[in-house]
Length: 403
Image (cartoon, rainbow, N blue to C red; front, side, top):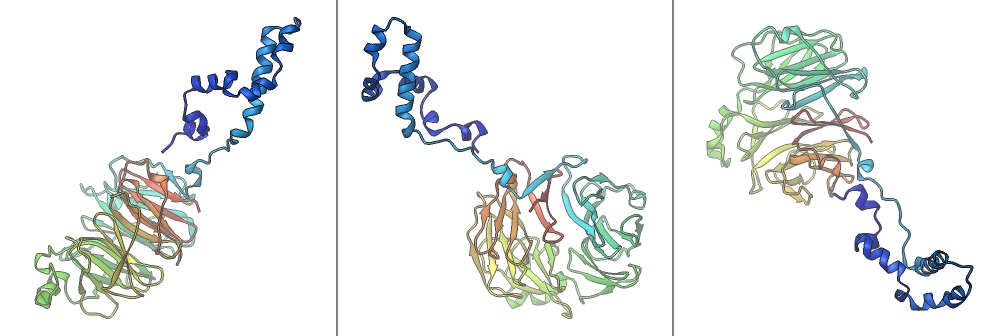
């Protein structure tokens, strides 16, 4: 990226040294016609005009003759000012990876930010400033929790983490209580969604989906078996890579209407689930490269990211195995997540500060250079609404959408 000094320097100055530029302007032989228009003889005969005045007159004449040849210099615009994102600096250790963010629906100035190393931050000014939040019930044991997911509906909120921990609030996060969990829970909790009064939906990395309607004291399974059990039954049905399945998800994403798409830990296939289905449905990938992440577009279709920086969109809406690639300028770094601000506008983020934008639903993407100088991976794009959005990364990197 060019420095500000380089951007403000005119092209004729950049292409030659200052000494050469000065010489060309001061030697009359460069423009003999123009120099002849100056009357040096009259100046010499007039003894009242000294040498300094003669040089000044000659330089002025040459300058006037060259002025049409030199284009006017316009002030350069700073690319930083054109960016729609701003970095916020947080009071946390540099090694913290930020994992999720949520705001109280009734008060969008009040929100919480989660991460590794037992990180919980709180804001009361819409996300401009953040402060560490202490929750005594999450600090009683000698564990370094990784808080994976947070969700609010009304004043009720939920937080899940690893090792297994479930926190609940009924007063918009002013106080949190810890809900006991069964030791038989299959896998680690990676996602939770508040769905109603004292109700939530929880997902583990082994594919278990549970729902509660009594503040988490009882949970009912929404699927009849884990993904490992499902694949053991369907491995002969032609699911490529299923025999090498390690039993956990790499990523899982939920649509607004309750459908899920998850990527296997090795990235060699993906799975989907819709409310009412007894099992997860495995799908072969139609792309040679392994899958990095998948999620839902604003129109109900799927987006798919592959390792190495490729981005694909499903044809049509709903669950599909038919994808087409969209060219992106990822600079060779992997794209890790996509977040939709509206049906047409979305942002993609990835390794080494890659930030991409689309304004036509994903058909074309342009690179935003806001994070080019940030030495961090951007893992997650979260839009609370069309005016409030954040990008979460490692090393405590948090970007806020400016609009």
